[in-house]
Amino acid sequence: MSTIRSAPSARQLALDAALTAAVLGFSVVQMTSQAFGAEAGEARGADMVGVALCLLAALPLLARHRAPRAALVAVLGATVALVALDYAVLTAPAPAIVLAALAERDRRQDAVLILIVCIATFAAFVAVAWARFGPEPGEYAITALLWAGGWLVSDRRRLARQRAAQERERAGQERERTAREQRLAVAEERTRIARELHDSAGHAINSILIQAGAARLVQDSQPERSREAIATIEAIARETMEDFDAILGGLRDGAPADLEPLPGIDRIAALVERHRAAGLDFSLRDRTGPELRLPPPIDRAAYRIAQEAMTNAARHGTGAAELTLECRDGVLTLTVANPVADGATARTTGGLGLTGMRERAALLGGTLDARRVGDRFEVRATLPHGSRTP
Image 1 (cartoon, rainbow, N blue to C red):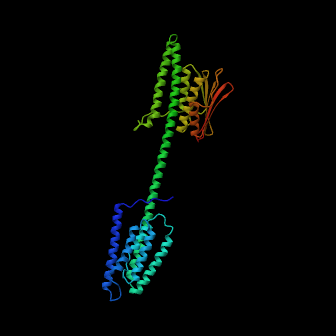
Image 2 (cartoon, rainbow, N blue to C red):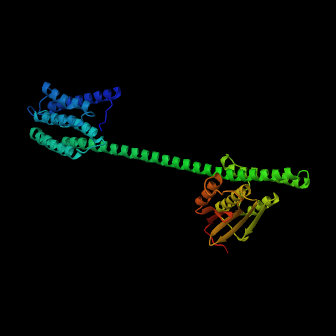
Image 3 (tube, helix red, strand yellow):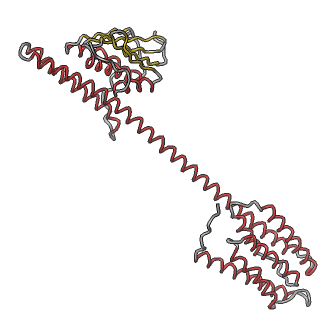
């Protein structure tokens, strides 16, 4: 794929013209001064042929960016021709300027060829000048340093630009990777918050429906029990708002430090008791022991899974459920089983509740199985927590 070169700017053209004029003037002045100070017959003065050769050595500088190899050939040829025709121009800056332009290119597959041509031309330049004007080691050394320095300095600049470009690219990639990780973290946090809100709100609404229904049924015959149900509704709403504050607190700038922690398995017993107070036949078999200490993510996940499973049991079952907690060999097992109502079909896939419970278990390296076993529907979650129970 060819690269389209942009036209040089007016500033670049002005700089090139000034540089060309400076090299031409330097060569003519050098030619004149060398002839003036030399013995008769040693060097020719600044005549039309000499000025034309100096012009031929300077004009290719205007094309050094567009056709650097052709410009190099032209200036090298003119430089050797000057000394071959007895013009004592022994310090030649034009090849150094063209070599600098060549070294700035990103692709220099012909670098070895350029090196060979320059060494051969310099050897011819020194040999002819030596034969015409005798040994002038200082002048030859200056020319050698100019040519080599033009290449080396420009090559170092090119490498520095490449390193800077690579650093910018790496920095851009790092910023992109960081932004991608931040977007992923935000997406994961949104998913977590959505799951927490679904579980908390779903359980609260279902419990409020049950309590409100009970209060309506007994408001005339058992007003005391109706008031208890209303008080339970108030408590559920308050606890749910506290859950919302805890879940959404991290999204606020300067979130309060005194928010209550999200609930864990220590509040499962109160959850079961609330369902029992609503007239449901719920029971808890806790075989974990009071000394069990779970990591916070496992603790919260176990509570949310139990909450969602009991909500489903109250909504789709016969009003009875049994919850069992066990912990063996570093694995917490939570089981919620409830009888299936006559004619009901238990759904084991789909639904936000089951999907959320499975996601919670999977994120913590555990599993969740929901299936019908005989006349009961059973949800079983296993959550490894990496520690042994005493």
